[in-house]
Length: 401
Image 1: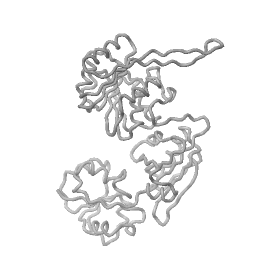
Image 2 (image 1 turned 90 degrees about the horizontal axis):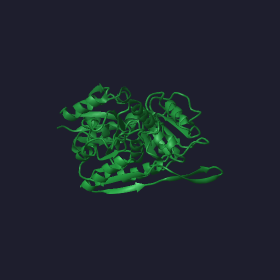
Image 3 (image 1 turned 30 degrees about the vertical axis):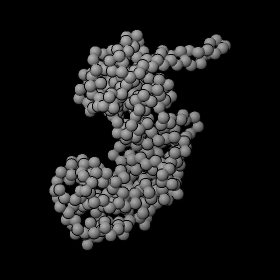
Image 4 (image 1 turned 180 degrees about the horizontal axis):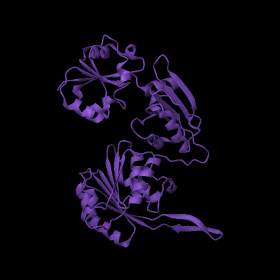
């Protein structure tokens, strides 16, 4: 297989490229890039110029499987940072890639604003809903968002404002590195303009008065969710996520997902993870998708409408399984157990005597721990205050050997 040259190029064009990147482009018989990127190359680069196709996935697959000699692919900025180089790296061996990075828009944005890059969060809304930014809206956080199209910044400003953070500092950075670079410093609630298609947005998060704090740790307030009552309550949810232990690139099955809170907070806690919510009720399934968008994880949560365990047969294998509804369904826990690899986790919550019997039997057969969780809240009783108990939850948690 031949090597693929991936050359990062900025708005400064040919002048901003190093000697190695220039040599790779001069050598290339074929150069693939956007019209904007191809227009930045001088006449001395004589290779055939091809427009980067859309959709991108078939092209990447063909490039990874093919044997076209001396091909170069242009990328914006650093190809390995939310770029085409990263996409290719997931498909080909490292020795097949010859990557020539350019300073990324993230690095340039941090430099312009004087923000230490290690203290800034990067998020990409390119090809995705701007709702992915909602996960990171906590007071004091600094983030840089990649967006796409002339309306990218405006759509993002609207979303940040709708999520209760309109006073946030909102800096639109257009054509970073070019002679006509422009930086507009505003607030999210005040920004409503189009921008050059080549732009990024820096946000310093500031909530409006009364906006609730929604941290990344599990246990969001119950009223953060749209629900019909089928919701794992806040304190039980925090204990459940601790037992599930979200880890990098793990896949969760949330079986009988209700309002989707376990899957959503699994994804909020670990940005590389993914989850599948299985819910038999169509109205609840739609509600799960809305909750995922509101809480900033719309792209990593798949919602499957169907009855478990039958609905599990076609799913990708899980790293962890939560059973919050339907514990008593015949063979459900056995099917979930069989799907798990070694080291996979099962957590099942029981609130009825019948479901307690099921998880007690599962512990006898599979091991693990049984924990009875009882939560009481102080509430008014006449002119006084007393404790009102929630229904106790019995939790079975086990790791597959």
